[in-house]
Length: 266
Image 1 (cartoon, rainbow, N blue to C red):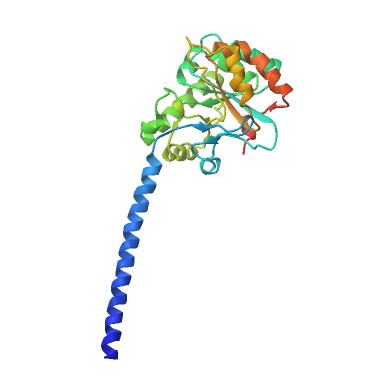
Image 2 (cartoon, rainbow, N blue to C red; image 1 turned 90 degrees about the vertical axis):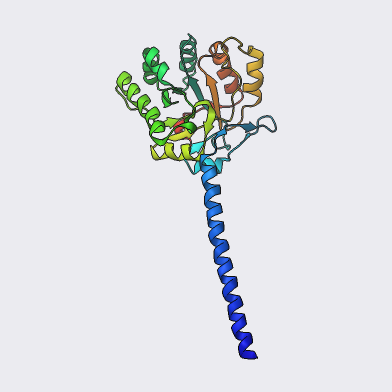
């Protein structure tokens, strides 16, 4: 009787082990599917704001982004701002922006697309000559999450080549996803190409050419929501930005902020 019990117990244990192994394998498949889905999930960069002057939260955390050499904010210990501009095309406002930056001895980063390089090479040369960084916003400004690996790489390489043709210099490998669309897969690919990806922690609706914000509306957002470590996104196409930048920089300086280059973020 005891011998029969031991045999049955062993058989039962064997079935339990087989079940656990099977469940583990199934769990492994499910984990792979989940990870794969996350890797290819398209997200639109978004922010959640709390108290005035405090760092907002991103829809992907700073810790998660850091795994891909990606950032949306700098360190919050000091009153430092990282000023960036997205430059899709030139409509006459960039010279005033560059004049204001030069007056305040401020270095900014301009994320440009192919059209900007093709139509405004002299302004691109001026950016480089005056100590600004020119970054990669892709050549054609597509949804990069919808591109194959080969197409993704081609978008960035084309812009690198055009910048080299214009300036004789290598493009700084800073990348900003067009339309703010990204996935873990695109962040990983950008990192593999040697790029650091930069989102933002402060922006406002300044890109509608025929519906520009007033100075008061711009200052409400850009002064009210500024915070230590802010990566600020402005559009160089904005007439409002061209008109207010000198005064905006003065106001930030009065608040105790310093503008530093993106290269200092780590």
